[in-house]
Image (cartoon, one colour):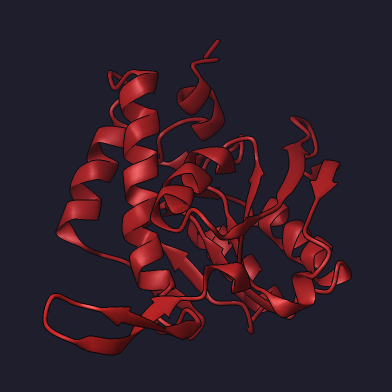
Length: 213
């Protein structure tokens, strides 16, 4: 984005196609969960463009050769619970040997502020490229707090991946964390009076896990 150099909008036709299905209220939780996973894999493809590489000596049917592999042990995916789990499933399928951590935050329905209830992270976080994931970037509060938690545990290289973002959340996140790359697949219009993204897709966690009221 022009005003925020650390923000990247992945405006790809395949991603846009899948997000349209996510937005549709008729999409049932099984389909929704699968598409979140697929979008996370597509987003990971771009966000991991500069992933650390190691060389492996192999033998092809023609000859011996040294070829590149992603150094998965230097990567860590951290979903913000619970909706972030839907994205981490896709990233785990992409790179199953990476480290994983988990951060639990919930939003107070009245104040709209995030509250921590769980945090479990690898002990060597300072040595890893950390990818924080959450499908929605609404006010930005949860993502900002999660980055603070990661830094407090020693993380030095952090990126944040979301699927849908509101302008308010992008502004808050990028101004607070100008050194953290932000990847998003859709930039929506605004937040409504209940801090939901418009047009959005509703509550991502409820739709992933089938807990709609």
